[in-house]
Structures are given as C-alpha cells and as structure tokens.
Image 1 (tube, rainbow, N blue to C red):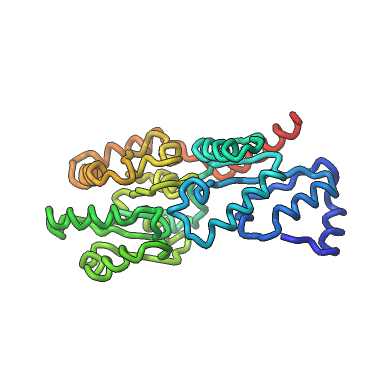
Image 2 (image 1 turned 120 degrees about the horizontal axis):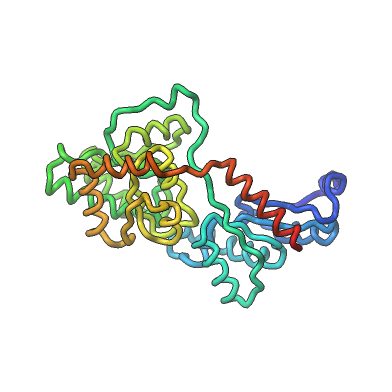
Length: 315
C-alpha cells in the first residue's frame, strides 16, 4: 500500500484528525503497508486499528509455507510501531499475540476479541434439506489442517468394517502445501477406492449443499486463529468433531466434541460413535437445534464498531 500524490490529496479531503483507519484484510503481503500507515498517522493525525486473525507464522512456523514467513515477520514488526488497537477473533489469538509481544519486549496495545459470525446468505431454494451421504471436512488441504489423520482413520475403518459400512469422506478445498506424502497415498489407493472425494472451487450454494448432505463434519486442525467451518457446521445444524487446538474449543461453544490433533485413537472413537451408535447423532443435533445460537455477521460488525468507539472514546 502506497499512496501517490493524487491518492494523498483525496485522502486529505476525506479524513480529519482523530479518524480511525481500520484494516480487516491480509495486509501482511503488502511490502510498504506499515510505512504508509506510519506516514498517514504522522501527516493526518489518524489512528490505526487492525484485525489479527492469527500469529501462526510466529507460533507454528512448521505449518506455514516457508515463503510466507519472512513477509509476516516484517509486517508484524512494522505493525507493533503503528497500531493503536488490535482486534482478534479468539481469546487464543489474543493470548498468543500478547506472548509474542512480551518475548520481543514490545508494548502490548489494547486488544479486543471480536467473535466471528457464521453462515452465509443463500437463495431460498438453496435451503432445502438434502439426503445425507458423507462426512465433510471444509478446509484447504495442507499440512496444518491434518487431513492425514482422517485418511488413516478411514483406511482403518474400511479394513475393520468393510467399505459398504463406511460413508464417503469429502474434502472441500484446494490442494495446498507440504502434503506430497498425502497426495501420493491418495493416488496410490485411488482415493481409498473412491471413499475420499476432493471438491474445489465451490460457490456458497454448493458448499451449503455439502453441509446439509453430511452426517456430520470433522476439523482435526493442528492450529487455528478461529476455525470458521466449525461454526458453519453448527449453523447448518451439523455436529462437528474437531481438534482441541488453539481457538477451536471457543468456536465449538460446548456443542463440539474434541480430540488432540495427534490423538488418532480418540478421534477414531468419536467418529465411530457418531457413525455407528444408534441415537448418538440425533441427540447431538437436537442439542444444537434447541440450544445453539449462531452468531451473525451483523453482530460481528456491531462488535467491531463498539470496540473501535469504546477504545478511542476512552483515549
């Protein structure tokens, strides 16, 4: 982000001292972002608030594509010099952020947790109920998301129960990084003879159909800043089995069962119980339907506005 002369003139005509620049996107990929914010603060007397979704490139570097880490490191260092307020989607990210700042001897700014909403707008005809055919994992297929755990569980269950008793496992997401071994094994087993299916580039209607058509969803990720598909699963009334890592218990809100991301025994037990124990899945869905209140994106927007107003009114 760099403003040319015309851009600065337009900016000057639209702001006044004390206004707040709010960044909700992935600005870490912009080389001069921090410098530009510093100049705008200096020249126009504005304040700066930023959403930090996660600090995984600092805390879980082994799960982040190597080419991204240096950009994030530089951006994070720049942000510590310019931010006046930080928003995070989870208490987990807020704690990790504080720890990283303390390790670096940097001042901890005001940090406000903003709970993300769930679900998305769909045409009325897309809200029909579909037949249930599969278990669903919505996620980019990369090392951090731990698809290997599910591959191994499905392979074991097919061997123990027979393919006819084990439903299809759907991976909804594009292929990412550090998964050469998983791709090799998927090809070698012909995607477990068709029991694993990968679907990419879905629109909202197609994704909603996959949620509705699932028996339940899974989310065994090693680490997250939030974990949006867990909330989406509950939004669609579908039980979820997720890891207990970082922020995921916050998203689950007591309606999700958890396992350690490397605990294949517990993960398999939870999945088998959902698949094969009569009445178990019905009871889980009844609890979701009767007691879970999905947060809306309108509420998220209101929380952001309130956090900004409260912080800077106090200042």
